[in-house]
Image (cartoon, rainbow, N blue to C red):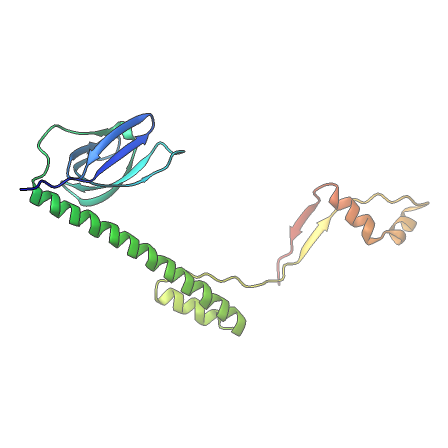
Length: 193
């Protein structure tokens, strides 16, 4: 009889280096409610982030994706899963991974549809219909329209002249541009009536 080699995850984060096998009992503390159950997979481990994310078959809540600091992971002593249990856990881990992949692909597809539909709605003036349909089907509203916004800029421009009236008469766009490019002027958006 051959024994099944169980997949294992190496957690190397936060100064920790831990091997966890599929089906191994785990206790993850440092949370409002600890997660106690059976290890399925290591999902993410980023070098710049000390936290890791894993999937665990929690004794109480079922399959859970858990993000935790490796220092909060403990591996209680005990027998590992039988070969039949290991096969079932392996199938469960594969199923969860496939579901997440499919869910991610579906979310990407929904986003692409919403973006393209938004572009078409803008091109043909169907923005209200688009908004209603996206809301009805629970899809994101991903379109932008162009709006004219009236802005008033207040800036002080220094002009050399013989009088205030002469300075006001001789001001040019280049004087204004020069004045506002050298500092941030005060500005406000005028409300539409």
